[in-house]
Length: 239
Image (cartoon, rainbow, N blue to C red):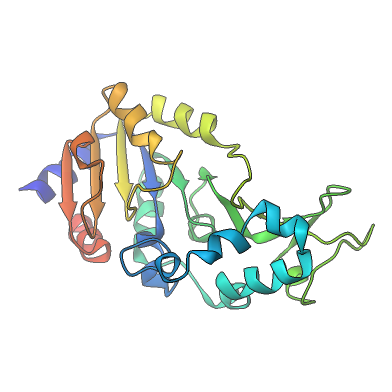
């Protein structure tokens, strides 16, 4: 019954804001960093190494650990899965879709969604902290420690590191304001301030749906909550 209600809510909404987490990308082979068995729980030191502080302290070792932890060399082997394509299909079929994603893999954009807010940045580029020049993924893979071709400073990845400010929160809230429905997919809602967005939607009285593999601490905020494999649920929603 929950699934049928969710399908009707999605069908009836002309504009949907979709919040996505690691559970959307796992079907593409990208590990879930924060689930119960995720990589972050295996080694809390990763948060130290993937930080603004450590980048400036030891940029050479930072890049070595960053590339290893995020499997940057494998990014080119990953592609959108049917969950990404489902969200693109909603847009193709005439809905106004905004995706606000915690994921840094760039797969929503690769799938073709036009309005993607990369809340935590992207693995696919880096910027020179000295002159502001931007570089794409192929350049980042040319050397162990990628540097700016113009001023030879070590590049800083465009991922939001621990200690970096979140710059997209206001834009995310604006998208929620303008939508008829909020759909949350594949996130544990443990990371702040991203997890303030469902609270914001609730404060505005926006209808909302959560689909996740396991319960979250914010389940009571949602009108519909479905615990199941996201890939399976999306296939059922498509029917």
